[in-house]
Length: 89
Image (cartoon, rainbow, N blue to C red):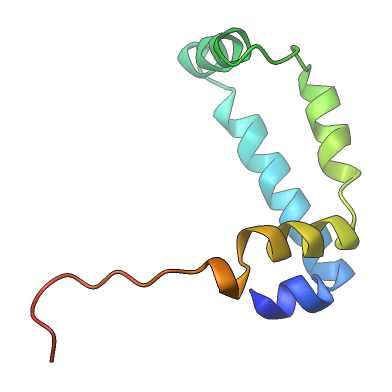
């Protein structure tokens, strides 16, 4: 994660990740229950409704710089914790 925060992802890997995620999103909306759950999520979280096309456009617009920034925010070594359960050796 520190490499991603410092260098982001190579464009090819970012594009592959976007394609994978778009496929997962589209497949997840095939059932009626999933579509209703998505609609309820917008209402419960007071988020504006986004069509599938809008979601896919937002995903396509993600840049390597944004990936690096998010990785830096979420995987900052200063914020990482280690939890160990059980006897210590």
